[in-house]
Image (cartoon, rainbow, N blue to C red; front, side):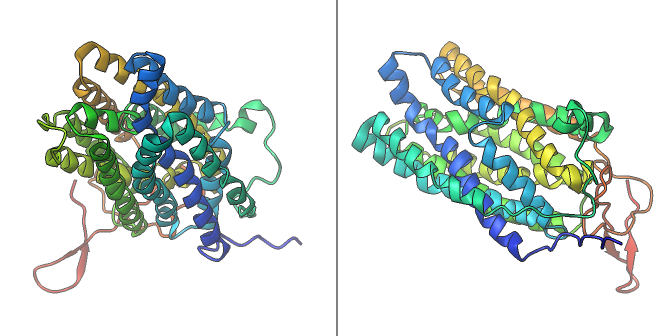
Length: 399
């Protein structure tokens, strides 16, 4: 009789996979977040509008994710493989890997501005291309792992092979719709946060500082959010809806920041708004991928990760060009950030249809730790409240 394969090791080589995923995230989305600094030079060189240059990042993002090319060839397998190596600490491991985005932005934003000043936009992009070649050894570190939840045979039929049959599950369908709407606004700051800072009156290095502050908040929040999610105190779906809504509110605040007044100003209000946005967006990011095993099961998590990237790319394809169009029509990015914040708030509202997203009047069950592996389940928290008569815990049954 064939022995049953063990469950996720929750460590071991999984930490090597986490380090590889950290580098992958930094060399893909971290680099994309900093590229906004080069858009003004591109617009000036080619004599194009903000809307036209925004299509550069939007098309790159959409093509690589929807068509599974470019960075998607390493990002989706890295995150999917990482989710299979962890169970109790899955969201923390994903959050650790996704801090590569913030760490890379922190380093690349001022570095890219220096490269633009020194070598121009052509030389700067060539050097960034050389840096991204380090993605190759990251892929070599991803070892396949056999788990009990894996299908005994490869899926049959095109729909199953692509994972499209996952849309037959109500929970994943709700998640997909909400994620597509969030994607319509989530990537706008990646492209237009630095140009927005320039419009607000900051210089090139001031705009780079704004991006760096958002990156610091983003990186720190991903670790804290991952740790919080793995404690099982609050259902992942509820955390997803809450931090998604906070991300939308953070972008509204970024759009409403007033002018600095001079290029020598520090832009304190914009720095504060960018930091708040970074904290909320960083808290949201690991939950998007951490919630997937509970929705589709550990056996379908790699396919689900690819589908999530495709869904976000649908919004990412239209968000930055729409932001550029609004900037060209209104003269600044205020309307752009208000619109993208509204998209994210709408997606977060749809997340409330996920299991466990809303409080229940029924007594809470025991916390699901490790997270469920079979799909269609999400952790239900047991909140311990101290009774007035002593330290005995009681279950929270409030709505």
